[in-house]
Image 1 (tube, rainbow, N blue to C red):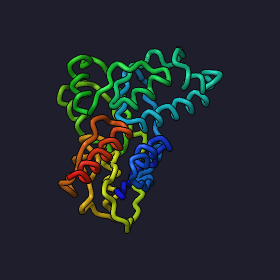
Image 2 (image 1 turned 120 degrees about the horizontal axis):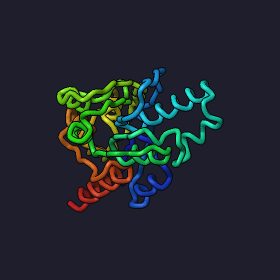
Image 3 (image 1 turned 90 degrees about the vertical axis):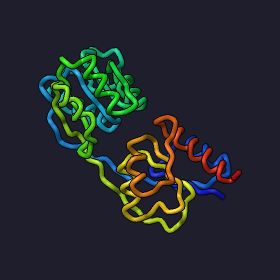
Image 4 (image 1 turned 60 degrees about the horizontal axis):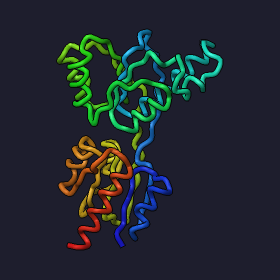
Amino acid sequence: MKSILSTKRLTPSQKNLILGVGFSVVEYDAIDIEFADFKLPLRLEHLIFTSKNAVKAFLKKIRETKAVNNSIRNTEMLLCAPDNSGVENYKCFCIGPKTETLLVNNGFEVIKSALNAKELAYFITEKYNKEHFSFFCGASRRAELPQILKEHSVSFEEIKVYTTLLKSMSFKQHFDALLFFSPSGVQSFIANNHLKNTLAVCIGSTTAAEAQKHTANFTIANDTTIESVIARAVKALNKQTLD
């Protein structure tokens, strides 16, 4: 029986995509997120988010700030109502469909959702280079986006809103495939394990770049969703069986 290790806990329906084809699955959270204590900029107009965690940290801070200031009666309405006037002036730029969905569901206007940091950065430099941006990110964010903005003299301020914590575990069992959803997830697994004779299935190119440091046996999902990562793993392992 083929075995898969997921470095993120899966929903029952996601697990069934693996179990339903006769494979076994082990799951754990390779990383954890800790929100930072930060101040919101006085000027909030054009917002950049490169992950769902950055959006969650921003929403949490908005909730806290509004509650303290007593500027609205019901903070949850601000965070949940798509037509709420409290967020209608924010113009958001983000990476990935899940990040976009979270923003839209909380009432924000998404101007651009890109597949990666480079695509988003160049869109901004071409279409919005005269605007000022607030870039909400993690403490270990990649350098591409801010570097490109600086090179094109786009005005922005960077606000680190969360820290990624590695939750390393040691596994004695051999797995046929490992599901990775971030570069940090790869780093966490590698801290106490190896990728020898195992297929690394990655959610995107940045995660694959980290996996490539440790193995040549890797593949990238067609889309940046958990389901797509699972589908890629199942297809690859089935092909191995046929070969």
